[in-house]
Length: 138
Image (cartoon, rainbow, N blue to C red; front, side, top):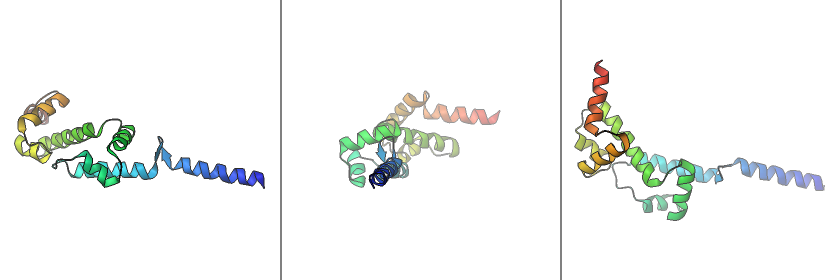
């Protein structure tokens, strides 16, 4: 009887650990992935950490810790990376003006958008677009 109880507890613990990844429960992982989808779908909005906390019911400190552990960078960096990725896509797939793209990805100031873009990509949005189009013409 004792052996059966030990096996039952071991299996229960194994199953519980199987529901965890990197020390994060499956439910938490899913919540963080849902936040990532929300961020990607709302890049044009002013995304506040407080709003993200309310969406999943975590404190700011806990969300920052879990987010960095799961994605490898801060929420702020994640939003910035997503915005730059979307801007790069729009620069090469549309004829939208840089100012329109800036607003579309959540920047109200074109100079600020250009500075953030250049800091992360190494060139300005206009240079990026021209370089991509030049590559296509060869």
